[in-house]
Image (cartoon, rainbow, N blue to C red; front, top):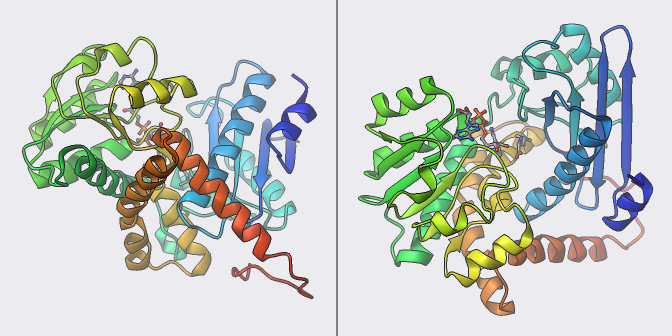
Length: 363
Ligand SMILES: NC(=O)c1ccc[n+]([C@@H]2O[C@H](COP(=O)([O-])OP(=O)(O)OC[C@H]3O[C@@H](n4cnc5c(N)ncnc54)[C@H](O)[C@@H]3O)[C@@H](O)[C@H]2O)c1
Ligand SMILES: CC(C)C[C@H](N)C(=O)O
């Protein structure tokens, strides 16, 4: 892989390799775009098989955060980090502290939080070395685990998508098929159950399935069955690339609205579901609740204010569809345009010279 060519193609600012022999840390921090503000995005810990795999993942995820943060209306740029290692075997205080020192060295250009494989406890260890970390324990005045707030945002976005598809945003009596009932989807199911939706769930983890069955009366189906069940809404909440050539022909839902990142395997799959008349809530728009919540910490965390902002995911989904109609494009493309147009507008408005110019965040 020619890293500089790739960085130039998608206009990346910076890629930082972090190595610490004492703790075994091997991490990469990607800062994609800081036009809107400091790059904020979680740290993923994953046992990547090759260095190239880790580099590709951090580049892809970092750029995704630029779009997510811009579309969410945050004064925040995009970035992400990956730690190469097995989260079940390779975590230690010294590893996260070493990582925290590298983040501190970037002097606020990158701010981290949780992602797949990292937890609030890990953020607490990073916090021992740097203030440029969010999603830390509430005891520190922080917002804690972002998953329940991500779930609330997905719930709000799902209601907007239902309005577009069915003419009403009520989910009462709607059948929702949920793929993966982990941290986010368990909380999503709670909102859906409270509103009177019927749930069909699957997971590779039996405990998680049983929890949803017992707590919300969900019907359990096999992991390959979930795509073809009779339902109104399909909610992908496990892994990426789940909207693909194999799954699309099976779908009976009219709406796709879930928490997973990078749901479309390729862009053409977004075109295909658009042509089929499905309403697709673009993943990074509907799952922005977590980052909206942690970003609020940069102003001194206020949960009420953060949740109010998360609620607006409903309007953002409607706005995406306005742009889709305006430009005659699928929703995933409309979301990209919305984010790119905002970055371009802000970038233009910042052309004026400002001595000691500051961002709104005093950190
Ligand atoms: N946690 C957040 O705040 C947040 C924010 C934005 C996006 N996301 C995305 O949402 C998704 C879910 O995040 P999470 O924090 O709930 O993760 P999680 O690991 O708690 O939940 C994922 C669940 O999916 C299950 N799963 C994995 N492969 C599966 C398969 N093939 N079939 C069925 N189930 C499968 C896992 O067993 C697990 O229960 C991820 O894609 C994540 O990147 C999460
Ligand atoms: C900042 C984090 C809470 C972001 C989250 N991991 C996401 O993918 O949106």
